[in-house]
Image (tube, rainbow, N blue to C red; front, side, top):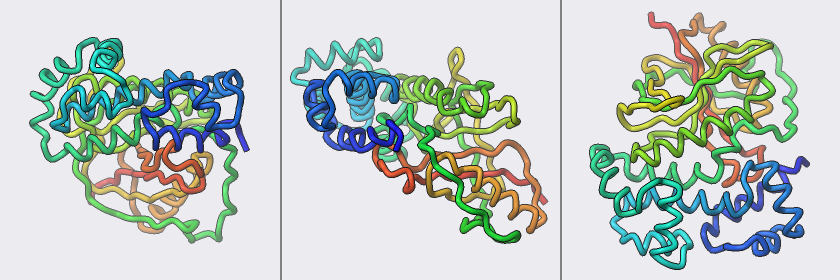
Length: 307
């Protein structure tokens, strides 16, 4: 078991109890390690100290609640585990560069155009915030043995037509073995940017593979959003292609995702279909919510050429 696998049950507990835990000693008591050891291991594996993680998650969830609910700022603050309006406002301003009240006033004007996405945005923000640096992490998964030629390795392959979806993302060229590290540095800023701009999420974190080779992979990682949005700096605005696609759900650790891609390739050969454009994968299950990598679900989507 890797160190990250050992920490996943703790992350699941942190997600569940949210803002109730306030000290490193509390976290260490939950985990069974010494505070010093937990601080060192947690920071190395997650990229933040336990308290930085807790505060960031609580504030990002609070930002979603300010946009979606009618609760007062004080109610949102208390729900997020803060003791007072003043303490919450200071922490919120440090992360979002404006007060909670100003954030709600300014960003709701944009957000209100997408009323039908209220619940999806809140659910996505609550589930994704704790795990935003953990997608595509390796937990030492070993590929399952392949089945005979012509079989789809127990994958259910679906051809469907989907709508074009606006997409906020960052682009990077990385070595294949560095994808997880790159995503941690890409998904976080996109998630925070969309949150700060009041742009509603329309789906889980997603990675698109523009090119993939043994040396370097060109990837675009970000968040599907509810409507057209402008990027800023390294954060770009585009879309995930609409039209005919073939997709499958991969169940298991990210280390074995290649089997899902192979299943789609085999299906296209057998059904005389051709790929059109870059495939992408969407992380349905959040590692912090489901600590067992064998239960993680990832949807793989490949656009197809039209008739």
